[in-house]
Image 1 (spheres, rainbow, N blue to C red):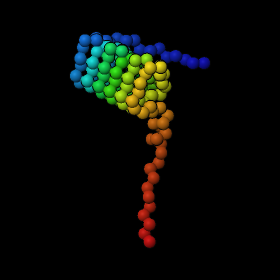
Image 2: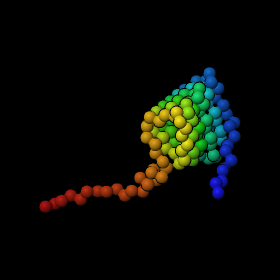
Image 3: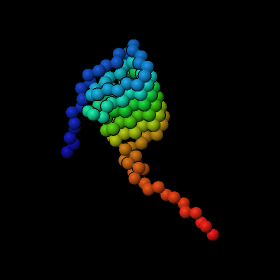
Image 4: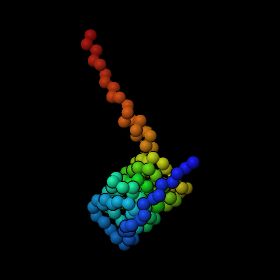
Amino acid sequence: MFKSKKQPAIKSLMAQDCVLEGHFNFSEGLRVDGVINGNLTGLPSAPSMLVISETASVVGAVVADHIIINGKVQGPVQARTLLELQPKAHVTGDVSYQTLEMHRGAVVDGRLIPAVVQERDQEKPTLKLAANNR
């Protein structure tokens, strides 16, 4: 009934004592244990998986196919397929997702925006008011 796709392997690690200033693009799998001050983007050319551990902190936009958060994120989060918010996750910013799994204790200070709502909003026609010339 449910088919599970094979997740990309975690091939890159940013250690706990590391601090990165600037934007970071990655492919396949990345685990962050340190601090990133900049946007974190999984390239759309291949499936991407991002793990933000409980010791990690990201200040910037986060975009990937499958995102697992157990640390802190200050900025918008966009999970193209699946977002997992684990018990120690704290996200300050809007969160968009196709599928969401949120554990007890996870905190989101922002809007939760399912992908269906985004698609529906894009399809709405623009309404224009006609001027009354009387």
